[in-house]
Length: 392
Image 1 (tube, rainbow, N blue to C red):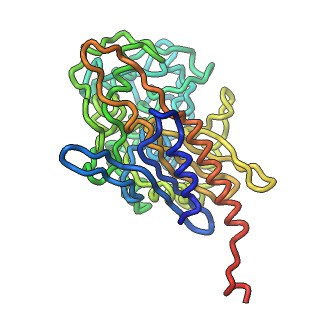
Image 2: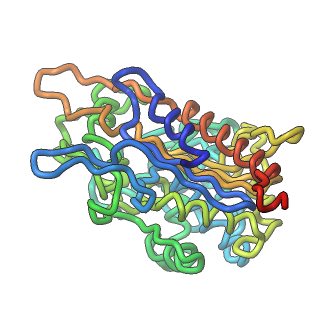
Image 3: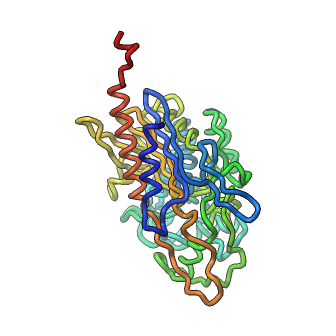
């Protein structure tokens, strides 16, 4: 019995009758050690195979947690080594990202969603070639003047990942392996990964299909019948995100990383200890954006109560239901997932059926459960249970 079992149960109960996550996992690390609990099904039963129970060693499609666990951490290491600065103009390393205000955009603005970029653009509906897609991401017009507004955008992290490639001379997969995974002994990698090593992230491409078909929440000038690559199968071991999967070869600055909860706990601990990334760099990346105090450099900022103190948490959520965060003032790391697309979005709509966007458990609801788990773990670490042997 784990102290975290009640939090797994809470995650599995989130949402309405048709929106409960298929599986959940919660991991917390404090000075007292690590604990991980799991529940639900990593893969549903099929005609040829039984259902697979959730396990802690299975890889999760991190989705947008990639933005911090890979891209932001890579930039932190490059800044620490003096190879790039946050005030670097993006166009110096991305020559096609120029004109109409783009020349003023900095690397920091890409990481803080203040570069004025469009919120979402399905690059794969224009090209499925990675180089062409990255070029198109640079050529898209801005939606606002840089530095005037906060607007969450995958495009900024796609471009930041491309900058990492230009600075290191390595592909993003190789840069992550050389600068993050190997130094820390992590098993995480960009996909695809073997199916039996991963958790199912979704039933199909139905969610993004619905976004394109309905124009919600972001209107785009495309039709779903203009793309032949929609996947109508469970997504297990291949990246869920459409741009990463269909246009960027599974490897991007905004999505594509697969990792275990234990790997994320180790990464969070390394970011806190001052050796992997220096404390001044961590503090700089933790600084809130003037345009949105909930946004740091790459990371999102939240907080939890620990006794009479408030602990700042740097973290990020992922569209698949993943979440990762660590405390600044307190020794706590949380990594988790409530796979909110699996068993919920269903197959692609049949011809003639009205496309829809399924209702999902919200990221805020998932985060709330996990911050509670972190606060509970900190309280337990501060007040360890005394055994009879210790009393004697």
